View (cartoon, rainbow, N blue to C red):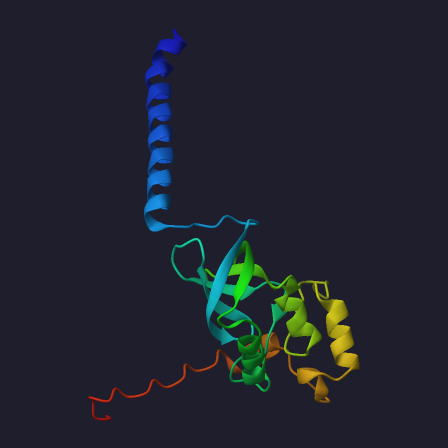
Length: 191
């Protein structure tokens, strides 16, 4: 008797599941490439926002993607060393084809990624050259602690100064960096 009560519900669930899968496949192919977590894809770097944030355009198509390098914390753009970190990342990856492996999303909706260029991990390179810290979490020194130790010992980049403030402490003390002023349009008179 129970079977007759649940049979219509089972039919509705199966039909809706089938429609959802068809809809997902259709919307995915209509909008282009949609990467999955832990699947590598090739992309061209189109913009670098700061020392650990950049934009890419997947070679397989789809929309531009805002990414944050996983495992590092570069100085804020308005912090000492911030512009140098951004410029180092620009020189290293801008307009380059890179391999992206998205791991998860951060609190701001950015994909946290492992990024390689010619088989070299970009985040490890940033720390090794003294442009970023290994990202510390709870009691861990982070994934690039060894690279940071070497950069500190060799007094590279941000580690050349006697004292250096980690971005987390800088943000806590100063808040976020102000947005840069936008240049006035040529047609508009300044206000």
